[in-house]
Length: 432
Image (cartoon, rainbow, N blue to C red; front, side, top):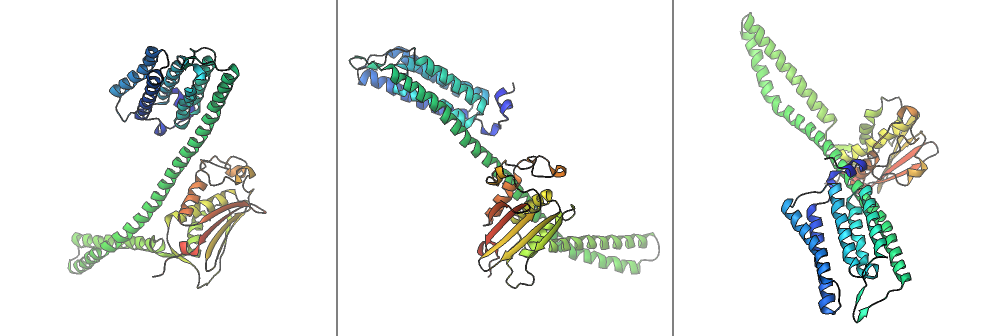
């Protein structure tokens, strides 16, 4: 049966609770409840409904044993089942507190535990329902409960104090639940975004590896093809006119064609070599080349013929990160994108400016966070205003920061400005 809670929230199954986690936590709660009841009854000599308390505790133990026997240790609970088990814990705790003083019992604060677990592991809807269930139980316990067990008789707690406890628990349910859910949700988003970043980087490295394999194959196949070509030429000279000579001629032509293909692979590798050195100007040209055919002028401003120009190894992460920033600038620019590169003995900087509408002020301070997108929010012109996932800038920023760069975003006089700064020691190829 489909899980309604999960469908309504769009919650990923990857973050569902492990059954083993709930079982272990419940055994811990059972041990604590048993110790408290036994300690109060036998240690302090306080009269309380011991049999009824143990029935409530036994119910939790029986449920744990049942779950352990029926489900494997690796079982992950869907949202509905997890919420039902946490709801059982709330009701069981309410029954136990009803037998031992209600909200006058200091252990009433334990109502926060199931709601906190739900807030960190489940979507908002079941967490809200569990919070409502806890609120109802707390409200009932404020009025209906057995007297608080106390040495020497019944201890009377002022009603105003009970009202204060009720208020504190209700406020804590709301505040801690919302706070824990926000923190856990941000962690989940960051984890998903980092996984996407790893996939992008792995793809770039895979493409670089394919370039290397192509060059290696071209080199290894060159010698046997040259030998075949030489033998074919000699056979063509000695074989008389006829079908056999035509076949030998065709064989030599196909060998020549194979050699041409291998030469193209070798030249492609030399132009796009993943393991060669690149100057900063060559790196920028490599990044800009795929974006020059979209009707937006791209100007590159960098010092020429500078012997001090930094040199680095080709880095797929840096190429992808800068390429993503350039692509965004081209998407949102009206007519022109300007890329400026500057360097000195200690620092290297690349600035990307466009003449578009700039970054929306409400998201400028959060640019680089996962799942934050400006597409469709009024930044782009109508012809480029398309929805985005909000991962492009995050992935670009993460990959560039991995290379040692600092990435800054701001609005200039005529559009958006992105600045990437590297310490020269982090960017430049180490001299041996």
